[in-house]
Length: 330
Image 1 (cartoon, rainbow, N blue to C red):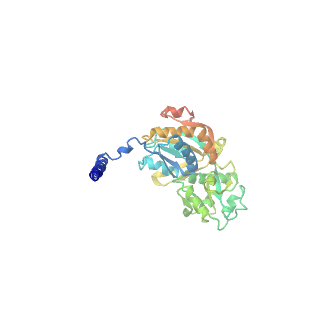
Image 2: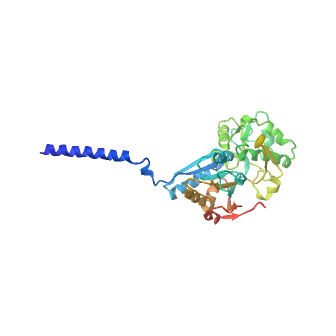
Image 3: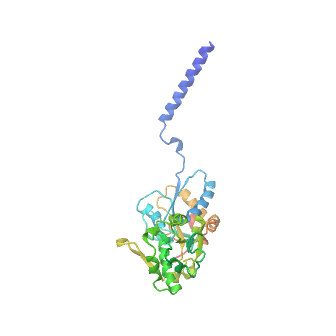
């Protein structure tokens, strides 16, 4: 009798397992994930990697159900992923806010300016003449035989065209006619990379002695930084008119355009159809508040006490507009 009872229990267990597998197989794909939020996707300028990583830790604590996906590159590449390739994205962060201040396919027509930076010369203790270089003689050091220096691609990353503008400003500041042309001639195309993170690797490997980048880059790669004078480093808003006296042409053919010098300032906007609009708004609220200012300072950026908003069509979400100060180019 006991043997028969045990046999019936086994049969019932087998039938139960089969029934469970049948129900599981019949369930619609992804039914268990029906209520999961889509990830928050941010395309950002590579120089903002540490800043976004810092804020990401806070965001994940406050929104544990939302995955955060970030993709760093040169600012122009980040924007083209949306405008040209149509890649899914919620937030765009650019190292030159002016790149977002234009009609862009798939991007909302407003931009928030939230932090600044300055151009500098990055190097290591093993760089040639590292013990001699100063803010007064850097261009002479770079033009010495055997010194290798680079910058990012001006057609893909603002750091690249900021570098060329710094060289133009340096001509006047140091009274060195023709200096920009000499610096360009000694910096071959092989010494340029899509973004500063690529240049860091060359510097740390000893393939470059110096590269032009943001002062904050030193924190990303544990590098030495030579700070350039304010008159040429693009950090000072009070010198905007002086910076604007220098300009460079980048691109070729129909894509050729002129870029004018200006204070370096980071911009943020949202895509027109963000997959996770709610999370995007929450992340931007975090950026525009005290947490964002602290993260900017920790990562070597210049935090703005008030986030500036350029919103000509009055389309910025109200929950963000309340955290910004409007400004106009007129």
